[in-house]
Image (cartoon, rainbow, N blue to C red; front, side, top):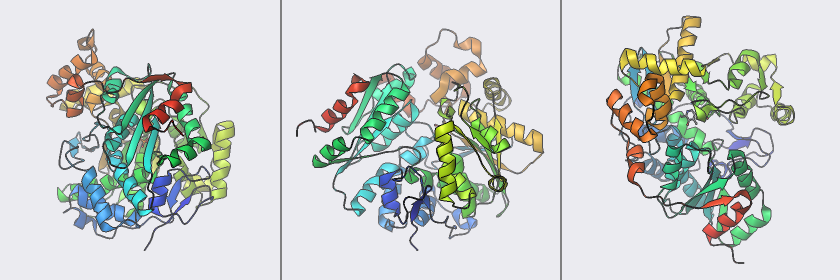
Length: 499
Ligand SMILES: *Cc1c(COP(=O)(O)O)cnc(C)c1O
């Protein structure tokens, strides 16, 4: 049965999966949601026998119904391959009674790889299905992580180009090195003289420039976006929750149907929403524990029913969660409002105008599977240190926020349900913060790359390829421009200056 998509704001409906992926955001500014959430067609026991790729197919085929079996299997094969440093793709590690679902074994050693490895393939297949002959041009502004994961995903994918703008002085040295050494003739990385907001506004202006789009269309190009609200990023994230449950079943850690809790370190609310979708598909998830850092806007929301972004933006050691507007929350709001687009528009308008909104008591009632917890900077560091001292396992700062939230949850509730903690980045991605948490003195006077060797020695783990590579890789991208020159830079890269 074909599954179609509609906008949370009511302005678009009956959209095929492939069109929703190509479009990204709905025309009315809403997010695409499926008309219903499909149930798994196989028993959890059957998934226990499957590889990650096989599970991916069984889950994605239920959402992407206008893709053929061959198209979808090709996308999966091209995504989850040797780019991952383990053939199980998303391994589970048992540490102190919890199961860490390691989502950082891909090309850029963070969980964004789980979806961004497959999105380019879904997009080119979608373009083919919709008779789109233009090359797809991905345009992204990044504060560091998403840009690199998108570059790695789109590099050398035929029929696509990718242009990433980052604030020249606003990313870490390792992040910058990761981006400017990016290979692939279809990639362009540009440093902006400005901050992240300047880069973001510049990209938005290009997306909104009708004249430019027409000019590019004549030259054979069209823009698309790889950001986390694309349904083509959300659905691949459901897969690992199904797979994790099945692995635990296979290993005899669970009996079929036994509930688990999941804890997810949250920023834009994509990862935890995927877990909620997995639950609705039939994975026995009891509680969804939403872990925040000091930007605890979601913690407050789950406690009070009021979402309020009017607060200082705090820079933390878990930067991928430094977010005050969690875009994917809109999909949850729409669902708990009983698919009421009018209500969704009302709340989103209030968010845009006043920076806050409050849900009804009936909506709040429907959130009872969620719990919010947060970790301070000090608690995050202490969690990294104590888990390391007790077990030898070294986790990154984002994962530590989740581990701390889990500890607070069990202390408060006494709930001993088996728990999967989403581990979203390799400790090597945030080496300095991790090493400082474990041994402040050891870090004094060391560069980030020297600390990488220290981390390897201390944890007894090999340095991931993603980090090894940047030590010797040549710089391929040297373009730096002012915000006002972003449009010309795009045109020049596409060879479309001339009319
Ligand atoms: C993006 C990211 C998150 C937050 O995930 P959301 O889906 O935006 O909630 C957490 N940890 C890391 C390392 C990330 O890169």
